[in-house]
Length: 463
Image (cartoon, rainbow, N blue to C red; front, side, top):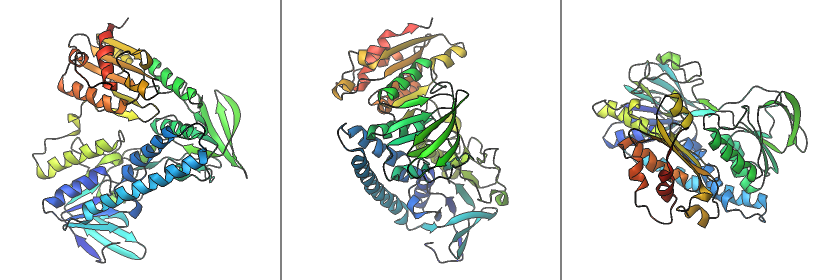
């Protein structure tokens, strides 16, 4: 711990150094309020995104994309991990000083547990510190889910954190789970030169997406040498001296798969274990997520929950928006809420990235909407040279437009720079900018945004 006092009273107590919590803490401390930030691990100063999530994994993704075919996989991996660690060390230090340098912030390293209303006990070794505050913010994030299967504790079995430092580099990798984390790691390790097999429990990839989008993603993954097994369940792991033997059930049949490492990408659950929430009167749902209202208030007066710990979509930018909602409650007019969120985009960082916002074509049709749809393969878009200049013209663009209002209701972008272009489309959806205005927009050249000029010119009714 950084504080030797046996008790501490502050204006605001933040448990967990995530994006929302650290930003809220800095804002409130900047206004003169006394803030205590409790984080269990010094290595997590700055939160999940900085230390083990978005930033380090996308650093590795970039380096995988830079690898040449004749480069040694293990050497490339080692250099990438070193660059990752150097960058994250710098960012963690910046995040530490973001709060440590504020005179009204007290940093406490240790495990927090509620012992009463708006009161926690923090333990670190033999030390104990009791912290009380009229306002408490729980921002403890989420942790990987781990299925209870035979042999699952094998040292060859990893989660998304431990796999970032796997040593030696696995020549053969099995990825259990085909969600965003699983597919990102599959694409990344294939880029570094591993033989990757994805175990997908469902009949096809990305069941929430239109079939043509999912099919294009699978085609690109398979083109990169990734094997995708559908209707595949892991039944157990046998750890050998040189490899792990996976017991599988694939489409109802037993099968074995020998690999050097396994990634469990089977989801993440709210990190609420042993927080003592019942002592504070904080309700959780059946998944362990803290129950909140649209203003992120929990069932306990004066206690809020930010980020992944209250369930729902797990994105760092939603945690950032959570801080705005709570800040509105504490220092503003209290009007801001989760219902204000419209057209929130997402990106899965495959190579190339898959970005999405709004409705799919199927969802729009199920709602009875009269829509126009435009779909183009990237390689066929004449007014989009940017991917070709980078040597990766794979993927597609699909945009769904309301036929009556000319407003975009959804888009799927699977191409170079998709993570950037999707933000423009999301902004258009929020502001009522029409498809025609985007179609006739003047965009820089060469850029991936130029696809809007051509693709939106091909809108047609849904048959």
